[in-house]
Image 1 (cartoon, rainbow, N blue to C red):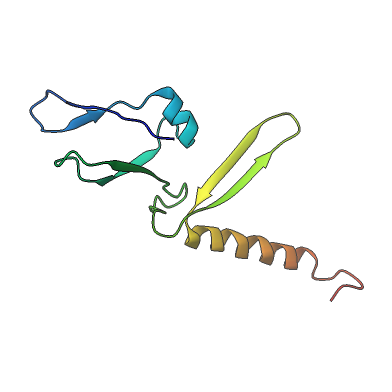
Image 2 (image 1 turned 180 degrees about the vertical axis):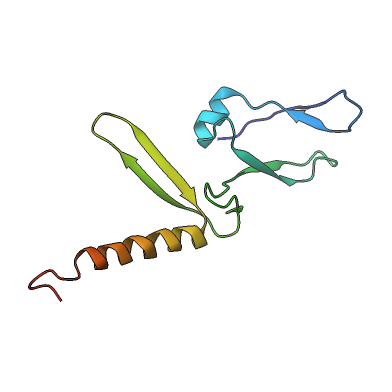
Length: 113
């Protein structure tokens, strides 16, 4: 799918441009309020641009643009959902911590070694 959008001057003397994104584009891309989007392309020459969602790690705030991100999430029976988007380092730490906790919890179990 493609959209043709127009930028407008922010009119505050900053030289910034405002790009309004229609709801159908946001929905199709899976973007929501608070997402950080990176602009790729050359607006000065009227060329096409690409917007790329940049996920920040919910723990340390690191951008996951280069590495991607992991998700730790839950959906409880009462319908409540919660989750964290994590950079590789924080995801690896969470996994190692959970594995270690499992090992300690089963340290003296019979028959499993």
